[in-house]
Structures are given as C-alpha cells and as structure tokens.
Image 1 (cartoon, helix red, strand yellow):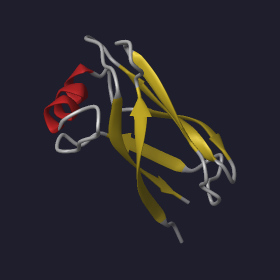
Image 2 (cartoon, one colour):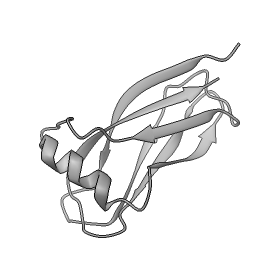
Image 3 (cartoon, one colour):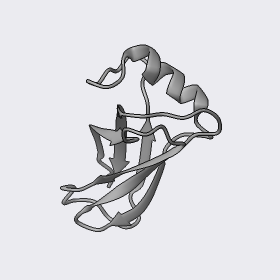
Amino acid sequence: MTTAVPFTSTVDFGATPTDEATAVITGLTDMTTSAHVECWLQGDDTTADNVAANHDALQFCMSGPPQAEARVAGTGFTARFRLAFGLAKGTFKFHSVYAI
C-alpha cells in the first residue's frame, strides 16, 4: 500500500538577492531513498518576508518545479529552487508530498 505524506516548509533565499536556494528537510522517519517526492509553490501563501504576490511571481521565475534531491532513508531530503530569471530574497513557503 502506498501512503502519500503531505507537509509544508520554507526555503530561505537569504538577505542578499540570489537565483538559487536549498531547504534541508529532516524529521521524516519513514522517508526512503526511492520515495517519490514532489515540491511546489502556491501563489496565495505568505511568510514574514514575502507576500502572496511574491510567492505567485516566484513560480514564474523558476526554471521548473523545485527539485527533491539527496533523499536520505529515515531522515528526509533536500529541496533545490533555481530561478531561470530574476532574483529572490527572504523566506518562501512551499509544499511537498512524498509517497512511501
């Protein structure tokens, strides 16, 4: 039986505008090295650093959806955000789901 586990986290582009950021996600005790992981942004999310309009705009600046990398069994994974154009700064909320 496959179970989908959804959750929300943040990625921090830092105080200086940049075109790439990563978020290390830990505490996923049922993560496997072969788990299917998807990450995405939602345009109506907000953080202390960025309003909904910034979350929405970031989706269109990215070179593709955030990539899930470096899956570690019993621990988590790394989410990588790359911008095709423009720069971002501060924290953004993102959503993920993984299938185990």
